[in-house]
Length: 312
Image 1 (cartoon, rainbow, N blue to C red):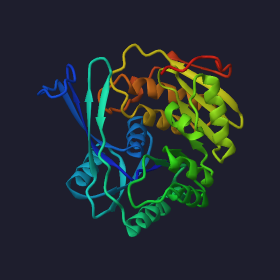
Image 2 (cartoon, rainbow, N blue to C red; image 1 turned 90 degrees about the vertical axis):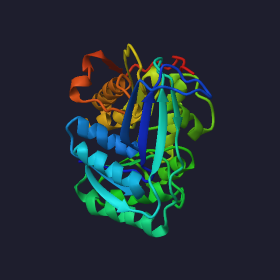
Image 3 (tube, helix red, strand yellow; image 1 turned 180 degrees about the vertical axis):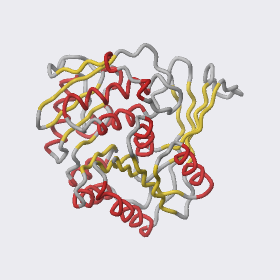
Image 4 (cartoon, rainbow, N blue to C red; image 1 turned 90 degrees about the horizontal axis):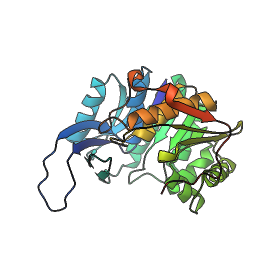
């Protein structure tokens, strides 16, 4: 089972418009409303692919109740932690050429009691989880060490830990020795404090994260594919995508595919690439089902193209 922890979930509304024109009244040609937050999206992608998943989420107010209802409709088990604040609501505007404009709310501050309640909920369910997946930004009230503490506790229950966050909380969380971390290219560059111009630069940056405690690094390089760097070696994977409709949640779908396929080695990387490629061709943050996946279109190689320039 994949257990996900999303300390700052959201209610996500996505509107498709012919063009984003500042200061004008826009007529949407399509709209979606989804439960959001990176960990929630991992659960949604895992469930869409037919895997058991449980989402630990702090929920509050009417938006929180709606998130819980939307998750239940997708047959996702939920371990809700009631909070006094209101779950945030986010807005995304999608244009036909794939351009996405997002407005993300900051979310409520959590009290020390609410923080401990989330950790306690993880402790209840972690013993039966193959993976504890810690995802997203940390809301106010949680220290940068929170993910490191969570990883240590999850390991104590015998679970492997996947981490998808950024900024100071990523670097500090490496102290908890997560089994895999999943940055995108921008987050990877931020973590090592320098720009990344090539795939080779990304490999070196991934190795630095491993030196600081990450067991493996699954890096999303956008249109340039994905990279897996672990103690067993490095692999590069990509897939041809004819049209990008929305990249919301694509990285989360990739992580779900990676973990569901075992969470290590080239086979898991191939699953991650297939899920990510399928996700960007779907509207809003819709998650791919097995019918959307095209594994034959995926290429994975240990011959990593180190000199390949990364798309800006």
